[in-house]
Length: 134
Image (cartoon, rainbow, N blue to C red; front, side):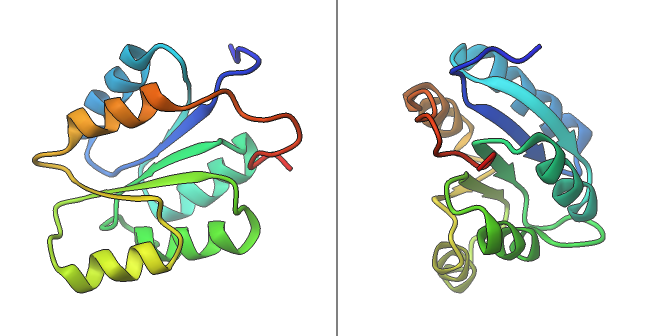
């Protein structure tokens, strides 16, 4: 069930264990709605097109399409979706490429899950007429 005025969050993560934990964080945040879970890049793009979330938590290393390709395709059409990259990769060049490509946050899986919750809790309701749904 979608609650009007609450940002919807789509997870794109191929690890079931981490996806489960992220889903718990979405529920714990209390001010956002869970929009769905994609296990690979192709499914992420498909669900993004169907659900049109305001927030996406995106893994970089996924089957079919990697997170960077998903980010590029989303940014090509939906500039208002907040994108959090969540990865184990620590190379500065990858971080810079993601941020240049339109990621709003670049977070480490092993140390930044609390930061994901902080970011979710800080989200305002989506402004009328400005969302990924546009």
